[in-house]
Length: 205
Ligand code: ATP
Image 1 (cartoon, rainbow, N blue to C red):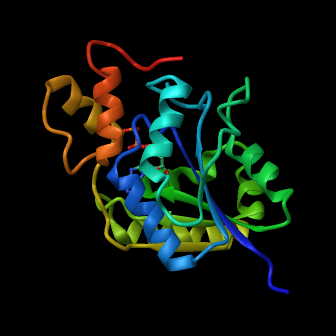
Image 2: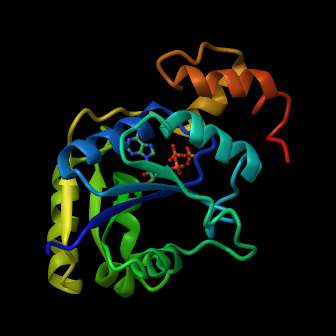
């Protein structure tokens, strides 16, 4: 029997925006995995997560909840320590499924500097999704580099790149600009209800 395949898409998701949703959709369409797990980080290793875990989790449920075969996981949020991707992969590998690690191009390019990167390449196929802002040949070069240096399995997806970041969304909120075309309507509702990212309010417990 063929081994089941699951995708893991981690991030701070502060807030989750349409670039994230389209990346998830591109992966679901291209690979047709058994499941896609959206894994918001608890305490990320290299940046501050803007927004409480409760707020980011609720926004992820709103943003990704309608995608087929997609589950929002609170695995990293429930952990008290720093969230390292390699530990999350080890956790999901226990299911016996083949793993795909989804990452946008910025994350994809920095992967070899992540904690225990060799193990990351061993545990998962890496699915790099273009953010639409990077140099494509750089992604292809990195793919070749990871394959040669780590025996990595790498898939690059270029479907519908959507050049947007959570930083840009937080900036628009602070300025009072429209969020349409940036966030799914269900996420806009939560942001407005909780006044998230406005007046220094970064979430709720
Ligand atoms: P911030 O601006 O706060 O740094 P971000 O927009 O980069 O946030 P993250 O939550 O850090 O979002 O990203 C989670 C994952 O989603 C990362 O792998 C990132 O590369 C990817 N990603 C973010 N934005 C996009 C996009 N527009 N298209 C494709 N992938 C994206």
